[in-house]
Length: 210
Image (cartoon, rainbow, N blue to C red; front, side, top):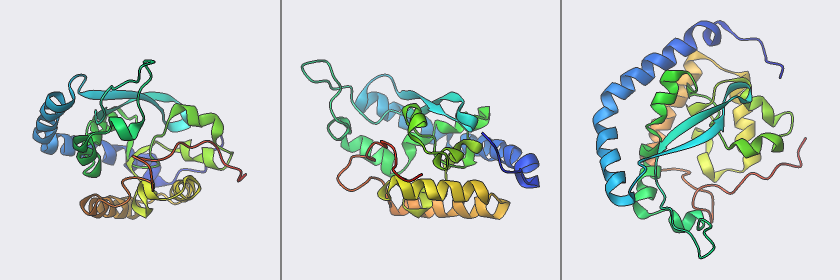
């Protein structure tokens, strides 16, 4: 994978800034995480955390952690029921407030993720990207990103990837902080939580656009 040249902000400041922001957020929000963990354990049972493999920078796989939002209900054949059935009202509240994503702060401390960047998606999507879409992996995935403040799950996959690549090509200090502040507004207004007719977002099956 050929990367665009890194600027001074990306080379020297972005990672230290990510670590400091994640550390401060972890300290400030630790009581919230404890309360959320207790509620998840009470309402959904164990495990409290939902770990899942996700591709990071250059497609390297890491373990992403979220608070659990779904039950483990299965059908008579032992297959998990659809997301919209397993996603409880409590789980919806966690997602609408993004509280389910707070454990990702530890991913940011480890260096798996950045505060701002393309959201880490599923490993099985990797072979489905075209060459242009795969450029989203030139940088660390983010807790939030340009696509999240331009529609989140309510926009198409193609539009989402276009915003991701636009971010990859235009990473700046001021741009990152603008996205952070816009994320706060988006979360407070509960915008773009799910795609139309879906509990979250329909699966990406590939694109005809090369």
